[in-house]
Image (cartoon, rainbow, N blue to C red; front, side, top):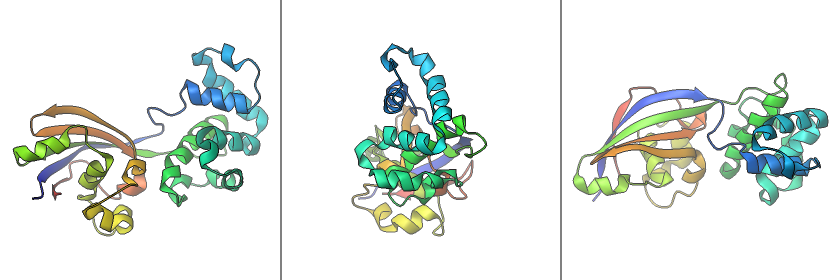
Length: 223
């Protein structure tokens, strides 16, 4: 029997970076790919400034290739990375990537490249949502503990019209069954609070997925 939930969008805001983008490990990978000497001797707090300076020395073309290599490694072929460089200068280039699993990485690439070349790359924008979900029955509360990405995406999708991109692309997957791409649609998720049958979550995703959704929207979901 499907469980029914009420959902309220508490806040929607625009953010320009992700909580776990460009940590020390990834920055060191980039600097090593750029053949910087003594990377292991650098303090974590110095890595970002060094990466930006190295990018500026390399230029956006070569530097951009290394940024993509640091992010994707073998999961993206060298030829694909090279062809992607110029596209990164477009508005919201991650939204044009057909491979959903690569969209988050492209967003990460623009974050760093924009800091090195602010006149060439636009400021990346993503949507940060806080939503509160209440189960209408006690049996539905179990699904709210450490939910899977597909459950949260279905919560959000229930507040969208049929015209929105998420519904048009994933209509069947949103109804039932396996929804593998949900883990790539949500770039960040965390449970902020939980009190019995009510939980509040914070998620980050590309703006393309939320369409015209707004603060204060309230709706019900049966899944």
